[in-house]
Length: 436
Image: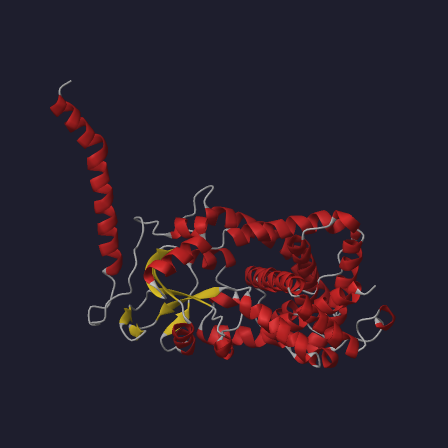
């Protein structure tokens, strides 16, 4: 074979496919930016759109923080990309995030990726809008009133005390904090959000299966919106269906107790409030909507809280002087020594723990359990004085870690006040164990 033939073969084998691939990426980039508002003279943020159809989703899912750090170092606080099937502008920096948050319902609106909406379902609070969202939120927030929080404290103490006894029995073997805390938070969320009975001794295996299903659903919550076998969306929906099947049993048992007037009428959990709201409006109970709302409540009530509690334990171990001040405040309230463990712990005492409250807030600021959120631009607007954000484009913004901007941070999926008091109760009992 002559030299010309070898060159032609190499051209067809390597060079031509490479050129076609580069051309496809360029055409994909042009296609993505073609949806921009032509009437806006401001340039788009810098960045790339990744591979055709997949965008840069795979890189972000596989590399996660490394991918975000690389993008920030290369393009700065604002850049364009393509995530989860949509053109996306990632926005960082306290002032930029503050403008996004203050522009809620005027410039932007909450809009989670298609995979999140598909897995959680259209009936959950995070996927509702306008009057439906306001009405559902009003009902659910009754479960996070001060009176309701007071009712939750004894349940939290009971579960945490039981869990701590088991942890202490491990001795020198040690244990992994995050998995254990997650199981603890899951049991508490089941009891105080869905009103389930205290778990029986033989239900540990079923409980572990449910926790693992939540972990699988969470891992695949943000994925490409492609429902084919072995895809992230497929695995997430499969885990979701298992969760719904288990939760439906609890919901039906809850409805039977309510109809038999056996449920506690003084302190109502979120599931009971949703059921009674439908009855008061003369509506037929939508089992699918109840399952979706219950799944969302459990997801927001144990995943993020477990993360916050684990971060708190970690930081207290890293900063002994902070732990010492925490112990001093607990001692001043008579909550530290074993002889004083019978003291009634209630909301009034929790609200007096000012330093502990600051420690918890600082933990949430440094390591927020919900690192950011997704929104969609309602209209084209400028950001940072020189960049245009196109209408209908997706925006991904993290929480601000600037303490001066702390008051402008958006709330988590569930009431942050409930999480704070919950973690306080957890820390109180952990601190009590330290002096036994």
